[in-house]
Every structure is written in structure tokens, then in C-alpha cells.
Length: 98
Image 1 (tube, rainbow, N blue to C red):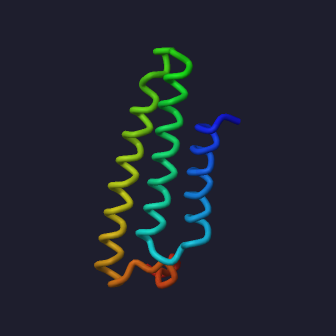
Image 2 (cartoon, one colour):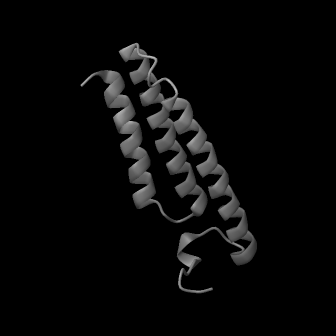
């Protein structure tokens, strides 16, 4: 395993571990998701540079566009949650309640 592959794999795993174990606030969960998406974007971009192909050159930009959409939807949910519940703690949210 090359050092760059190890670095981006460990970045992804650390983001996943942060998402799994530190679920106290919605903002921390969103930051872990953004870290995971950033590691995937950089790894995919470096993979495209190593292959020297132009057939999949649009895929990192597509991933970045989906990441931006995911971030905007997450921030909109964070604002809506903070306005209705006056907190962003995930334990205070009840999915069964309307």
C-alpha cells in the first residue's frame, strides 16, 4: 500500500469513526461527512492523475458537486433543527414525533 493510499484511506476511516462514535451534535456529524467526502474527492482526483485517462476526468467534479449539495442540505437541516428545537444535539431529536 502506497503512503498516499494509506493517508486517504485513514482519512476516510477517521471520518467514519468520528461519525460513528461522536454523534452528540448535528454539526459534528456534518463535519465528519464533509471530511469523508473530501478524502474521497482527493483520492479520486489523484487516481485520475495516475491513470492518465480523460474518460473519467469529470467524475471528481461530479463528486464535488454532490458534496456541495449534501453540505447545503445538511446546513439547511441544521438551521431548521436549531430553530425548532433550539439545539443541535442529536439525542434531543425524536424521529417519531411530528
